Image (cartoon, rainbow, N blue to C red; front, side):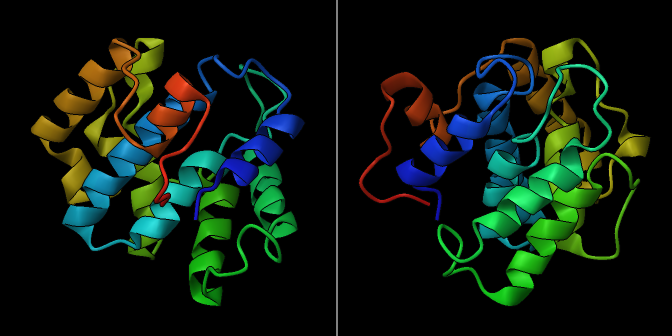
Length: 178
């Protein structure tokens, strides 16, 4: 569901440094973390993947920007009938909630939304912060192994070998996109 057209449209409206701490390399790690967590939590993997590109897509600042989550949710809504038309309504509702609430809510009743929250929170190593297990919503995210793996990748600013990582390195997407 992540297409070159979607990424190009998101980039065209992006207000901060595309390569900054809330930019595309962060999204690639959030994508990677979300896929790993969804495998363990049973979350909707498509939603976690889409969350990675929408959750910080409407930031106006690398610093405090408390309304960026709701703006990201509204961007997803803007693309509902184009880029996201194949996404089932219930999955879209979870994507919208995850984006809207990811910085203002500690947790959520829905496992997919919680998994999205954790996929973002586990990438704090990119800014020199170790994720606090007490601030994570799922057992899978709270595991010492998951935190250590995510922290290492964030600290190294690793570019994962996934659809977003390939977009970073080549400017293209593989033939079969997520």
